[in-house]
Structures are given as structure tokens and as C-alpha cells.
Image (cartoon, rainbow, N blue to C red; front, side, top):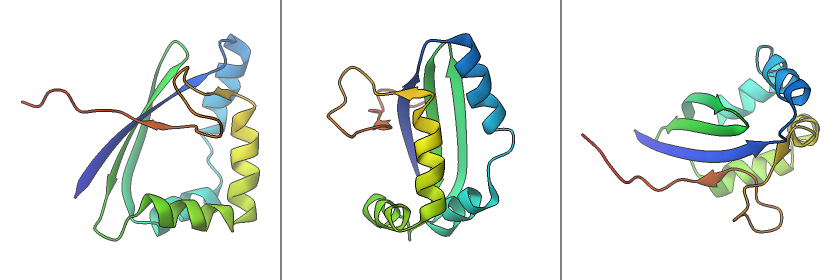
Length: 109
């Protein structure tokens, strides 16, 4: 099983951050299905201030390209992503259109 770690920022507004967290207490079933159906076995999101950190554990069938294509073709995922973008902002180093950015592993015990 592979593990990927990604980062993204939220808009630095306490009310928006609270709303974002509320949405993640009740993630839509279609979104959960799109996640698990893509080969993601476990996903966790952590927050400090307005910085988000996502850990994804995936099986051998997972592909970022296939997940992106499936998401682009899924109206409910597009609706969720549009809603989430109300709260999110790209990292300063992100290219136009990039959201979650892959983090480099620098240590392992």
C-alpha cells in the first residue's frame, strides 16, 4: 500500500474554517464513494491554523490521473469541489488550477 501526503491552505477566516470543518463532519455519500471507488483505502485531513495536511493510503489500483478523470466526469464531485473552493486557497507555490500539492517525504523512522 502506498501513502501520499498533500497540503493545501484554507482562507484565513475563522468563520470559513469552521464551516469547512462542519462540511467534513458530514461528507456527502457520493464523495465518499468517489474516494473509495478510486482505490483510496484511507484518507485523513489535519489542520493547523489555515494549513491542511492530507494523508492518503491507496491500493495498487489507484492512479491520480484516473481519479482526476473520474472526478471531472462526476457532477456531484464537481459540485463538492466548487463548494470547497469557497474555503480553500492554493499554496503560494501552486500553479494555476492546482489545489492539493504533493509533499516530499524528508524523514522516516
